[in-house]
Amino acid sequence: MSDAAAETGAEGRSEGEVVRLSEIALRINGQARRLEVDPRTTLLDALREHLRLSGTKKGCDHGQCGACTVLINGRRVNACLTLAVMHEGDEVVTIEGLGDPGGLHPMQRAFVECDGFQCGYCTPGQICSAVGMLAEVAAGWPSHATSDVASPRIALTDEEIRERMSGNICRCAAYPNIVAAVRGIAEGGPE
Image (cartoon, rainbow, N blue to C red; front, top):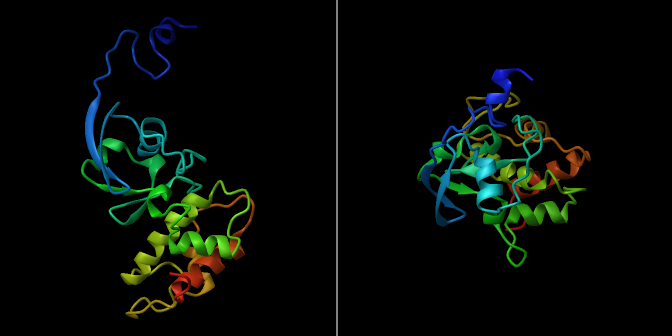
Protein backbone atom coordinates (compact mmCIF):
# COMPACT_ATOMS: atom_id res chain seq x y z
CA MET A 1 0.00 0.00 0.00
CA SER A 2 1.38 3.42 -0.91
CA ASP A 3 1.98 6.14 1.68
CA ALA A 4 -0.79 8.23 0.08
CA ALA A 5 -3.23 5.31 0.30
CA ALA A 6 -2.31 4.69 3.93
CA GLU A 7 -2.99 8.34 4.81
CA THR A 8 -6.41 8.30 3.18
CA GLY A 9 -9.42 7.01 5.11
CA ALA A 10 -12.14 4.75 3.74
CA GLU A 11 -14.24 7.79 2.81
CA GLY A 12 -11.44 9.45 0.82
CA ARG A 13 -10.45 11.84 3.64
CA SER A 14 -7.00 12.29 5.11
CA GLU A 15 -6.45 10.54 8.40
CA GLY A 16 -7.48 12.82 11.25
CA GLU A 17 -9.53 15.13 9.00
CA VAL A 18 -12.62 16.47 10.77
CA VAL A 19 -15.86 16.34 8.81
CA ARG A 20 -18.12 19.26 9.53
CA LEU A 21 -21.73 18.14 9.72
CA SER A 22 -24.49 20.18 8.14
CA GLU A 23 -27.72 20.75 10.00
CA ILE A 24 -30.75 20.57 7.73
CA ALA A 25 -34.49 20.81 8.16
CA LEU A 26 -36.79 18.80 5.91
CA ARG A 27 -40.45 17.92 5.91
CA ILE A 28 -40.57 14.15 5.62
CA ASN A 29 -44.01 12.63 5.11
CA GLY A 30 -45.64 15.71 6.60
CA GLN A 31 -43.39 15.92 9.68
CA ALA A 32 -40.67 18.49 10.32
CA ARG A 33 -37.35 16.67 10.75
CA ARG A 34 -33.94 18.09 11.64
CA LEU A 35 -30.77 16.18 10.83
CA GLU A 36 -27.05 16.63 11.16
CA VAL A 37 -25.40 14.94 8.21
CA ASP A 38 -22.12 14.84 6.38
CA PRO A 39 -22.74 17.24 3.45
CA ARG A 40 -21.97 14.34 1.07
CA THR A 41 -24.86 12.23 2.40
CA THR A 42 -27.38 11.35 -0.26
CA LEU A 43 -31.06 11.85 0.44
CA LEU A 44 -31.44 8.08 0.15
CA ASP A 45 -28.90 7.45 2.92
CA ALA A 46 -30.41 10.20 5.07
CA LEU A 47 -33.84 8.54 4.77
CA ARG A 48 -32.65 4.99 5.34
CA GLU A 49 -29.71 5.38 7.73
CA HIS A 50 -30.55 8.53 9.69
CA LEU A 51 -34.35 8.43 9.77
CA ARG A 52 -34.78 4.63 9.55
CA LEU A 53 -37.35 4.89 6.74
CA SER A 54 -36.54 1.64 5.00
CA GLY A 55 -39.31 1.71 2.38
CA THR A 56 -37.14 3.64 -0.06
CA LYS A 57 -34.80 1.02 -1.48
CA LYS A 58 -31.15 1.19 -2.46
CA GLY A 59 -30.90 -0.68 -5.73
CA CYS A 60 -28.14 0.35 -8.10
CA ASP A 61 -27.05 3.52 -6.25
CA HIS A 62 -26.45 5.09 -9.70
CA GLY A 63 -29.93 6.39 -10.63
CA GLN A 64 -30.56 3.64 -13.16
CA CYS A 65 -33.13 1.39 -11.45
CA GLY A 66 -35.57 3.80 -9.78
CA ALA A 67 -35.90 1.74 -6.57
CA CYS A 68 -35.09 4.89 -4.57
CA THR A 69 -37.72 7.13 -6.19
CA VAL A 70 -39.37 9.58 -3.78
CA LEU A 71 -41.47 12.69 -4.29
CA ILE A 72 -39.83 16.04 -3.55
CA ASN A 73 -42.25 18.95 -3.64
CA GLY A 74 -44.54 16.69 -5.67
CA ARG A 75 -41.94 15.73 -8.29
CA ARG A 76 -40.32 12.32 -8.57
CA VAL A 77 -36.62 12.18 -7.85
CA ASN A 78 -34.05 9.39 -7.54
CA ALA A 79 -32.96 9.85 -3.91
CA CYS A 80 -29.57 8.22 -4.58
CA LEU A 81 -28.61 11.02 -6.98
CA THR A 82 -29.33 14.01 -4.78
CA LEU A 83 -27.69 15.22 -1.61
CA ALA A 84 -29.80 15.65 1.52
CA VAL A 85 -28.41 19.17 2.09
CA MET A 86 -29.86 20.25 -1.27
CA HIS A 87 -33.38 19.82 0.06
CA GLU A 88 -33.42 22.18 3.02
CA GLY A 89 -37.07 23.03 3.66
CA ASP A 90 -38.39 20.73 0.93
CA GLU A 91 -41.37 18.40 1.31
CA VAL A 92 -40.20 14.81 0.82
CA VAL A 93 -42.74 12.00 0.51
CA THR A 94 -41.60 8.40 0.70
CA ILE A 95 -43.71 5.27 0.32
CA GLU A 96 -44.37 5.44 4.08
CA GLY A 97 -45.94 8.87 3.59
CA LEU A 98 -48.34 7.84 0.83
CA GLY A 99 -50.37 5.48 2.97
CA ASP A 100 -50.27 2.83 5.63
CA PRO A 101 -51.73 -0.67 5.96
CA GLY A 102 -54.99 0.73 7.36
CA GLY A 103 -55.35 3.45 4.74
CA LEU A 104 -53.57 2.69 1.48
CA HIS A 105 -53.04 5.36 -1.15
CA PRO A 106 -55.14 4.63 -4.27
CA MET A 107 -51.99 3.72 -6.23
CA GLN A 108 -50.93 1.29 -3.49
CA ARG A 109 -54.37 -0.34 -3.62
CA ALA A 110 -54.18 -0.54 -7.42
CA PHE A 111 -50.81 -2.29 -7.23
CA VAL A 112 -52.29 -4.82 -4.79
CA GLU A 113 -55.46 -5.35 -6.86
CA CYS A 114 -53.54 -5.69 -10.16
CA ASP A 115 -50.73 -7.77 -8.63
CA GLY A 116 -48.27 -5.09 -9.75
CA PHE A 117 -45.41 -6.56 -7.75
CA GLN A 118 -43.73 -9.88 -7.26
CA CYS A 119 -40.75 -9.72 -4.93
CA GLY A 120 -41.79 -6.19 -3.92
CA TYR A 121 -38.31 -4.67 -3.86
CA CYS A 122 -38.96 -2.16 -6.64
CA THR A 123 -42.57 -1.53 -5.61
CA PRO A 124 -42.05 1.53 -3.36
CA GLY A 125 -40.12 3.33 -6.11
CA GLN A 126 -42.62 2.19 -8.75
CA ILE A 127 -45.54 3.53 -6.72
CA CYS A 128 -43.89 6.88 -5.93
CA SER A 129 -42.90 7.21 -9.57
CA ALA A 130 -46.43 6.41 -10.75
CA VAL A 131 -47.93 9.03 -8.42
CA GLY A 132 -45.44 11.64 -9.67
CA MET A 133 -45.96 10.58 -13.27
CA LEU A 134 -49.73 11.06 -13.06
CA ALA A 135 -49.14 14.56 -11.68
CA GLU A 136 -46.90 15.29 -14.69
CA VAL A 137 -49.64 14.06 -17.04
CA ALA A 138 -52.23 16.20 -15.25
CA ALA A 139 -49.92 19.22 -15.68
CA GLY A 140 -49.74 18.50 -19.43
CA TRP A 141 -46.07 17.55 -19.58
CA PRO A 142 -45.44 15.54 -22.77
CA SER A 143 -43.10 12.57 -22.95
CA HIS A 144 -41.14 11.03 -25.79
CA ALA A 145 -44.17 8.81 -26.53
CA THR A 146 -46.78 11.61 -26.52
CA SER A 147 -48.39 11.56 -29.95
CA ASP A 148 -49.66 15.17 -29.89
CA VAL A 149 -47.46 17.42 -27.75
CA ALA A 150 -49.71 20.42 -28.48
CA SER A 151 -52.82 18.71 -27.11
CA PRO A 152 -54.01 20.08 -23.76
CA ARG A 153 -54.92 16.54 -22.68
CA ILE A 154 -52.45 13.67 -22.92
CA ALA A 155 -53.86 10.28 -23.89
CA LEU A 156 -52.42 7.88 -21.34
CA THR A 157 -51.95 4.82 -23.52
CA ASP A 158 -50.04 1.74 -22.41
CA GLU A 159 -47.12 2.95 -24.54
CA GLU A 160 -47.24 6.35 -22.82
CA ILE A 161 -47.29 4.73 -19.37
CA ARG A 162 -44.39 2.42 -20.25
CA GLU A 163 -42.32 5.35 -21.54
CA ARG A 164 -43.01 7.48 -18.47
CA MET A 165 -42.24 4.60 -16.08
CA SER A 166 -39.12 3.48 -17.99
CA GLY A 167 -36.83 4.86 -15.27
CA ASN A 168 -38.10 2.20 -12.86
CA ILE A 169 -36.85 -1.31 -13.40
CA CYS A 170 -38.66 -4.42 -12.17
CA ARG A 171 -36.38 -7.44 -12.24
CA CYS A 172 -39.38 -9.75 -11.76
CA ALA A 173 -41.01 -8.36 -14.93
CA ALA A 174 -44.35 -7.38 -13.41
CA TYR A 175 -44.57 -4.64 -16.06
CA PRO A 176 -47.99 -5.57 -17.54
CA ASN A 177 -49.54 -5.50 -14.07
CA ILE A 178 -47.80 -2.22 -13.20
CA VAL A 179 -49.16 -0.66 -16.39
CA ALA A 180 -52.63 -2.00 -15.54
CA ALA A 181 -52.45 -0.49 -12.04
CA VAL A 182 -51.38 2.91 -13.34
CA ARG A 183 -53.97 2.84 -16.13
CA GLY A 184 -56.70 1.90 -13.63
CA ILE A 185 -55.92 4.93 -11.45
CA ALA A 186 -55.59 7.21 -14.48
CA GLU A 187 -59.03 6.08 -15.65
CA GLY A 188 -60.58 6.83 -12.27
CA GLY A 189 -59.94 3.51 -10.55
CA PRO A 190 -60.03 2.96 -6.80
CA GLU A 191 -59.87 6.18 -4.79
